[in-house]
Figure 1 (spheres, one colour):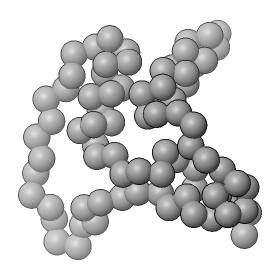
Figure 2 (figure 1 turned 60 degrees about the vertical axis):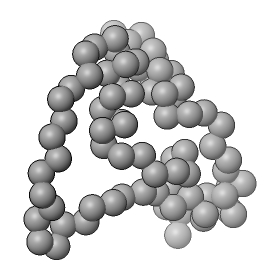
Figure 3 (figure 1 turned 45 degrees about the vertical axis):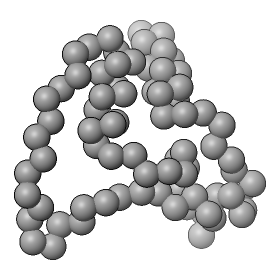
Length: 79
């Protein structure tokens, strides 16, 4: 199966993700309010990188912040 999860290999919550994106963009952090979960709603998501580690010898080398900074810098160069 040629599908792999590529990530930092650690769980990140939505608040942390939004705050990090805001910080990298130099924007104010958003006000985030958590609502009660709906019946059957999954409350946690994370990517399992075991297969990528095993098959590709993948090892995360950058933090969430560094990865976002590099991605945004590259994206801003696209005209």
